[in-house]
Image 1: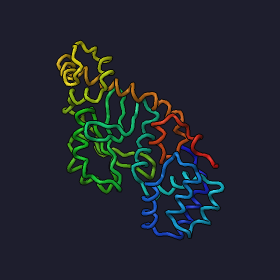
Image 2: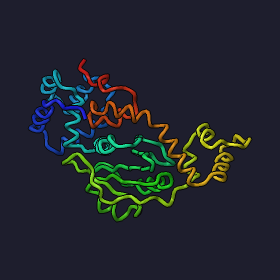
Image 3: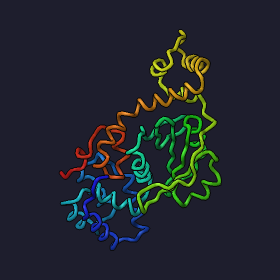
Image 4: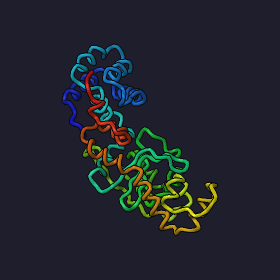
Length: 286
């Protein structure tokens, strides 16, 4: 994690003398919608001024001479808006030094998976921070259990009783340990018995399917090809090659991220993992 300029704490303290906790949470939500790591520093400071209002303009002008706006937003979110960005940081921080390949924001069946990892086994992680809704969780877990061997819900403490009572027994449950910037395991995941080979191969592009399974039929119809693979290969082989496909697809991005992650801010981990841009290209005054 990037070392934060100590003056960010001083700025936050001065802001706290002006606004209440409720106001700071509300401002943080607005900033989260506006924040883009690719915006230049001046633009981000201007967004902060617009959100916090004229009373803070002189304060921000003074601190912006030395501070990056990204650093202040990171410090603000760490204290007042522990949203999905921070949960992603905690997960990645836990996995980055281990033998994994990790990917973010993947379309899987009818859901969008927050994070997956491959390390011989396959894991799906769905994040529900205190600012998220549980409305779609049941369907999301259903989709992931058809594709991945182990599924985890990484959830805010306020949801824990509801999650334990309602999510399938084979789903693992994690909660953040924000005091130590870590993760606590509430319940370990059990290997899914619902893995569906047809669902898995539908996630693989046709050209990759042909490379992995040596398609030997003349039809170019996708459904014929899917049926051929399922009828010809065992469930175990399809699962293994599905994992191999994911690992191959995301390995380079993950390896690149592991090199630069110590220079990235926690709120931006999710952005840098999917790009080849290094933090020094985005974190600068000017």
